[in-house]
Length: 68
Image (cartoon, rainbow, N blue to C red; front, side, top):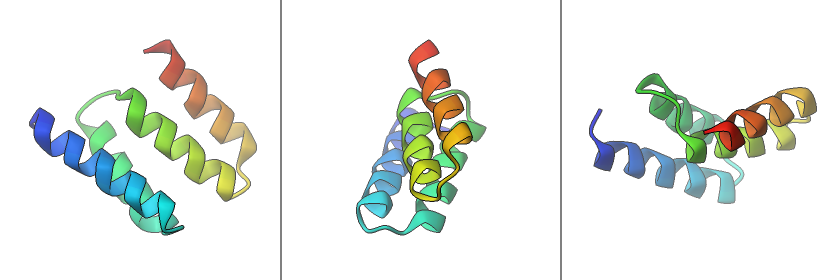
């Protein structure tokens, strides 16, 4: 996946988070991760997990983002 496509998916995921569309956000951000680790995608997925009350997963994703 090209860098621009990843950026577009991250942006789409962030927009979905802002609209509280967790399914769309998760789908976009997970597609980014299929191409490799990405701090922005991990951070976005952490937000989704937090809003879905998956706190342990949110922490794990955020830690992975910080490690990059």
